[in-house]
Length: 231
Image (tube, rainbow, N blue to C red; front, side):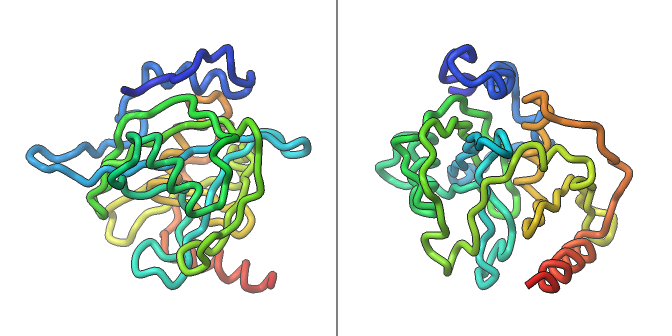
């Protein structure tokens, strides 16, 4: 089942449009990639957890993977991972993974919508994003530094800021997609694609320069150089 889990009138006004939009959203709103015929990819879920802070307003919880990992090292992601026996569907997977990775107290989280499965060819996962409202925020941190380097609440206003947005491409004229740079975070790939669609569906997007296309390796290297210089 995909779409709203709650009445949009029962969430904060700033989140209501996104919950409402989830009713008519299919996978094509996020990606052009679908599960190939004849394949049964492993199920996974991510938790897209929206909260609100007094100064910065609405935000979303993101994490940066450890630089020492064999795959996806240093990349920014939503909390999440593969389904396990005992999980109560995609929502159960998303909540369990978020607790394991960030230490968030799931009792303060209210799932509000489930999005369609999104296929990731590199890892061969079919990922279900679970949207949730952080009704009772709790402290979060990198539970296992060997897997997670940092956990951050990123304001939606900073994600929507045109100064923080551009496109990246891999060498050779292949893949191209949106990206964000916010503080120490360089967001691209699956996570940036989902965030881009959510900003649009939630009514938070501001006009930005889609023609600003940068080579991924160069953009990431320059970002790391800037962050290293600030240490």
